[in-house]
Amino acid sequence: MKAVKMKTSKIKLSSKATLKAAKTFTRRTLLKSAVAAASAAAMGPWIVRDAFSSSGNLKIMMWSDYLPDSISQAFKDATGIHLSQSLYGSDEELLHRVKAFKGRGFDLICPTASHMAHWRALSLLQPWDMKRAPLDRMDQGMLEASLKAGTWGGKAHHLPFVWGTEGLAWRTDKWFREPADLTYGDLWSPQLKGKIMGAPNSMLLTLGLYLDRIGEVPSNRMLDSYKDEDSMRGIWDKITKFAVEHRSWVKLFWEDAEGQISGFKNNGVVLGQTWDGPPTRLSNGGEPVGFRAPVEGALGWLAGLSIPAGAENLDQVYEFLKFQYTPRNGAKLANTTGYASCAAGADEFLDDKMKKKTAEVYRDGALDRLWWWPIEEPWHATIRAEYRDKFIAA
Image (tube, rainbow, N blue to C red; front, side):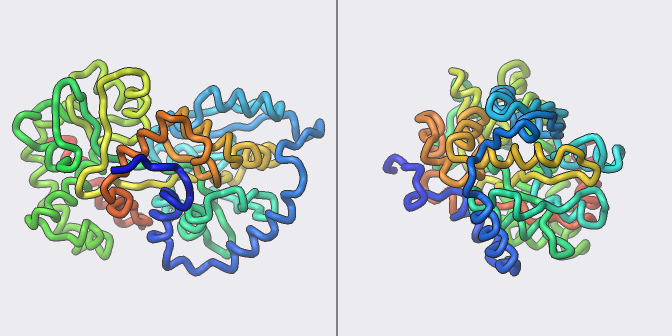
């Protein structure tokens, strides 16, 4: 395969993949009018320098590895705003914490688009002021996906921040597999018993993708399990039975990025189902760890930004948006974390390591095989938790 240039015309990762997920989006009028308003408001400098907005605090509740200290410091240097973070490792944890605080104590949070239905019935978020948000500086495919997931009552509650994938990572010094043949089924091969890791929810999901591909548990690439409870249980009963019988294959279940890194470095894991960021950072640091999208498709996710109902520092929130949605700052975030920024044009400024990683991971039609997490209704999450608990406890 030829080297991949990170240009819109060659491989627009975000738009190409996400427009498929968002093709039924019906809020185009909202999107177009909001972008037009943002363009009109964007004529001034992107970093506001008056004394009021270039000071104060911004409190963010963020995934454990999405916003490194170097980015926080760069934001402070540019705006004078002090950014403090409280970290979490799952969407469930985020929702529980915001509910416990009744939407107060934080100015910005980072829910995943597929989980926004859980927030819809609650009064924990306030809508974005679309005239103040730099919408024209965001990848438009990802913006459509965010609006599809996070718009209710005619108002948007979710804007795209970073996106990434979950696939297979392994110790290249302890295991070999031709990348073109890599499959989620490899996790359950006899030679890897007691040497694999993953997150239980997504391990069950990818087991379903594998069993569907080989014809043992037909599920329309697991999409049938999102239809209704009966359809879901008919599929997940069989998947979970297999997982329970192979529970001894699992060395550990990780909860966050640090757990993934520790699994490979300290806990004897050889093959793991992981996010793309942690193995990328390990590889960039010289560790013998590879990452690829399996033949069934990497799992795609979109993490966005939302404002809790009790947020107090709104001027600082919008300054963060102005700072982060520039091509160079978006690229700096991507280069540091290993995830893809939703800032339009960021791919033009990626460093060589990130470009190489992207070319390797998304080769041979891997972009077309991405499996984007559907918007999940609460009933689905409740049932999935039952099967997850059975798997963990086996």
